[in-house]
Amino acid sequence: MKMWILVLGLFFSMLPGCRSHAQQGDFPVLKGAYLGQKPPGMMPEVFAPGIVSSPEFVDFKGSFSPGGNEYYFYRLSHPSDELIPTIFFTKVENGVWTKLAALQISQGASAFHPCVSSDDKWLLFYWQFGPGGAQRTGFYASARTDTGWSVPKYAGQGMYLTSDKSGQFYTTESVWGNQPKHYLARVTFSNSLFTNYERLSINPHYGNQTHPCIAPDGSYIIFDINVENGSLYVSFKNKDGKWGEAIDLTRHGFEPDTRGAYISPDGKYLFFSCKGDIWWVDSKVIEKLAPK
Image (cartoon, rainbow, N blue to C red; front, top):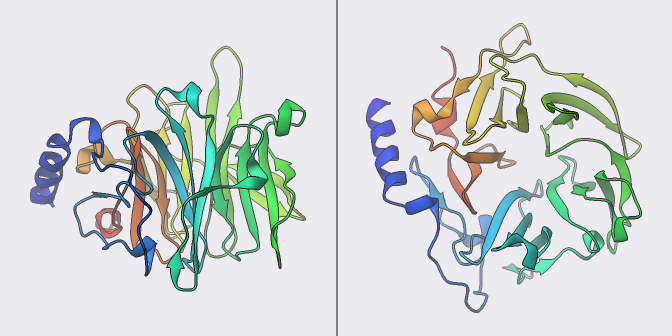
């Protein structure tokens, strides 16, 4: 394990700012799982360089559909005022991944954090003020129909969203004020609305736990500490159902300022964001840390 940490640290150090240098060209013909990309091993790799992760944009928080045949993520440009945060997607048609396109139902205002529900019936995303600033800021839900996604409806408050295979959702609950506080929370999603926010008790807290990422089987949760140069932490669920003390992943090879974790629906790969790109790595790098 120590050797892997040293190798991973060397890997990150060789990549200035964790940026990808692949160039955006004509959209290639992509076939197979995960946009036809070769799966990574125990060393992180940029996900779909020049396609999803592009040096022209800041790319963040992707979500695959449960069947793995759709992928949604959001991006903004450098500088950020050139392109408001916009959700893009690609899906498999006739065995080939389609060219990236902006998600039309989320147009009109900044859109973040797409999340496809584990039953594949809902697409949820964070919408800042809604179209034209006339609606509430928060998560919106679109139902899958025979012709695509329905008109989004306000679902409730939160920031970032994740769900396990049972359909249990987790989000960030924020308390705003002179010193904002952020908490991880379980939330019930029923009749297209969020109810019953229940804060998680995970130490250390630091007053700013954000961006939860639950494992598909619910056995662990990864999150950010929302401070300057914050980083990822992981907490494993104990046999009594309580969450164990969080483990700082910077002590296990991950670079600071690594955020926005996401576990693939099959539980095999960890995706995360590092200074503008989306990366992925075998989820065994997390599973190895589980208490014996």
